[in-house]
Image: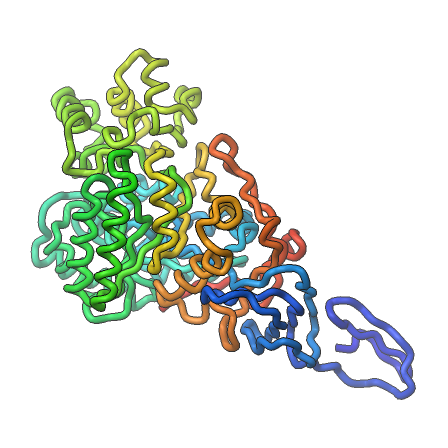
Length: 560
């Protein structure tokens, strides 16, 4: 559009810069461009897994308008992508940023690793919907994973309305956590739900889905979802039956019983007929490495061939991170945080927990599977405990002259169970096998605690996939890796308009040199931005330009 004009002089904004000149005739008119942006001469990896091809990409009104070898029409902005790769924006469908979206600076660590879409509310633990009856207990239980903050929790509509008021650099969506829906109805009580409670769970789930939740998440490794048996699960999840609404599942056991857990979820998938996403697939424990995952992948391939709608995802690290209380046997979790703290101090309960930790094989007994030396304390809130931050429970045991299981119970009770851990649990060969499998997407499972030391995947997960698993280890080709961060997760959750470069799709795009992409953080210093993603467009707006934030906020709240 003309910035100023007289009889024979005009200044125009062309390609993002001012151009001026003298013209032979008066110009009292606007200049119209066919497109808002054209990205020229990039090597396009379109998110389908296909090889790269050279093309221009035209953007109009937040969507991809054209993809062609040479687009002759003009645009208000042109971006030279010669020598670089253009991909869809990356999607992380398994993140725990429910409250992080409200924090200052949200979006930068995501954009710098190429993320343009994240989905929160995973593992049954979402920031909504739950009302005042059990709110305090639920929020305390969730705090090691999603952090702390004051947001509307009563309904998904209220939560999403609050998020919409923010200037969002990236797109965000929410799964409705089955765990918080149950806790809202019955607290952290174990056992079967009665008929009225089951109706209330159904009503809460249906309302959440009607208000825009992208699906339902299930956390069978956490309370209170762990109190469902298989038939109880099917009954509780009845609102999903016969729909295309995805169920995203943290399975009951990811260790020696992982094959049994997969069978349980295939039973649920067949009974409900809805898509099921198996979250962060793994086999915990050295005794299970290299053996159980090949059998699991073969079983899942057969299920898909039989028409079961099942897919899965994986994070590219041998260490995970979650609540330290996850080491405890599930029956101890009944009653919520207040009751658990009492149990951790009761001599009889402590003796029972010790026996279960030392001998239990019917649950995800992490301390037995990987050893106390592989369980590191990553969030501690009390000042007197800060010298223990980053140390393993084996190291803590040696420092305090006390058995590691007793140290764990003492610390959990003193910190009201708000401790997080980083636990080294899986094998590279299993990660590689899952990455190569047809039904796999890449996720981070990143938590957002408000204190302590996060897992480096929060900052560098998607850069790591490219740097390590494409160029260093050769596990995936670059087109395969891009597909598993774009088209595959978008399909798994049914995210329309996302994950593929094609006309009509959302203009969420990354431009970068793949060999310059690096994860910068480590377990000791995790809070370091990834490097190498130069330019990121969100809804057609440039959010990151040549490595610098622009302040553009093209993100929106995604709903079904």
